[in-house]
Amino acid sequence: MKNFQQNLLITLALALCGLCAWQWYAQTRQRLHIDSLDQAIFKQSTEIQGYTNSIKTMDTEIAGLQARINELKLDALTNSQIILSQKRDLLRLQVNAGILSNEIVQYQSVTNFLDTKLQEAYDGIKKQNDAVTRLVAERDEFIGKYTNSVIAANAIAEKYNEMVERVKKLQDAAAAAAAGSKR
Image (cartoon, rainbow, N blue to C red; front, side, top):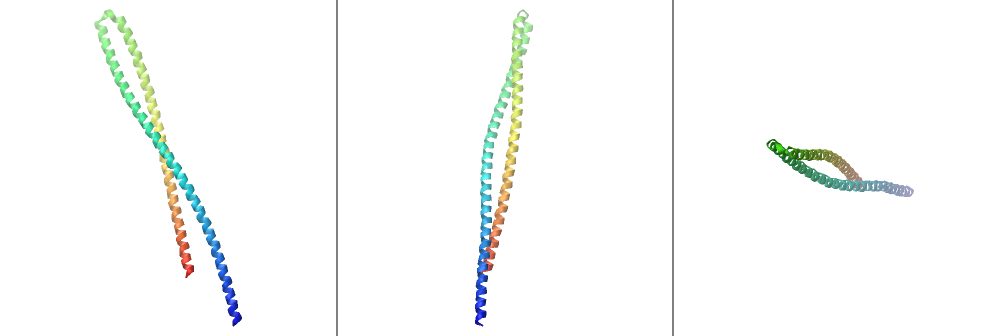
């Protein structure tokens, strides 16, 4: 009977050593997995910070473009008032040309001068309208980029949340396993 108890004790000691070795191996693998998850989380938070900085930069650029658009709108309004004023001057000069027929040559040169100024104003308005159209397209492009970056950031946040839930489940399972093995 003494031999049996010694053999049983040796067998149980070897089984306990095996269990300890197996638990050590399993916890080492879990720790390596947790470390890789921590590195992934760090990388993702770094990327999120980069995206946030990019969004702030785009917001600043968009605000600047909107201010420029407002300036161009004011310029277009001023130019339309100038054109209206020039049209009034032209009409006044034409009426005066009919009344003062002896000064037709002088008024003819004045109206030609005003016509060229009016054409320059029209050309300036056309350039400004083209610039406004281009700025609106650029603004839409920046807004598209901003939207895409927000969508990407949201996707990263969802992945992060899923990863946190998985890590928590793993920790809960490990804790449950540890609690189960202590019993």
